[in-house]
Image 1 (tube, rainbow, N blue to C red):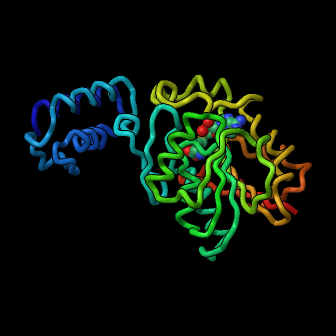
Image 2: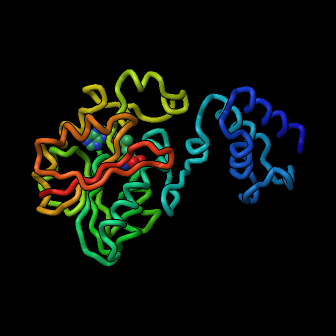
Image 3: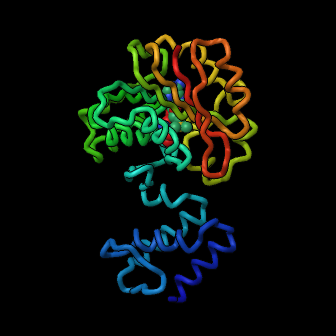
Length: 276
Ligand SMILES: C[S@@+](CC[C@H](N)C(=O)[O-])C[C@H]1O[C@@H](n2cnc3c(N)ncnc32)[C@H](O)[C@@H]1O
């Protein structure tokens, strides 16, 4: 391997960057003059814009995630534009897509979905592609996040299906067949412990919730059933160790717990409720 690249790799290892080879490869591909996928074992150094690559290395050494450097993150079956205004889509959130697919086996079904806190738009857009006759409202309180969602809606050709709306649950006056959300759910204490990658480069408003991380679930338990029809579904992500408290929060509602799904690390991650 070229000495310069090897030095970069060593620096990444010293900084304890989790997947140093992969990150170097992705950054090399991004700095490739021919914009091709680079593999470290057959690297043609003449194809790399070294000055640009060096600037990418410095960003990564300053904790900036590769996704925020390259403005790209994969989720479900698509690639999304991301920047500092949105939280990167996470693999565990794909459980929400799987859950809707379990409920509606007929992909041609016509139904209405609400996505609360859409961020990059990853959930809404993935659902729109899976269910071409669905109609989706994607809301977020952040104007800048919605700009990113709108960009991704256009990039993914789902403009006729997904409409964004600036606001919160209180601004919704319609009924939905499925409501999905991955709300902020970290307590202040947990937020203070997250990796610098997240704290420095993801919006705080996407991560932190009052009431020790439970404020969104508490608010949903009071209001969400007003915009659900009988047999409508409410599917949402929860944080580590929030299962028991979340179930308790929804105890005195007209929502019945249908399913608890675990993520790949066997952590309870998604709850599915149905309105009775
Ligand atoms: C955890 S992120 C989820 C983003 C995206 N849905 C995903 O799963 O990757 C939460 C999102 O909720 C938005 N948000 C925060 N408070 C909100 C509120 N009161 N009403 C609507 N959206 C809110 C944030 O701006 C952020 O985009």
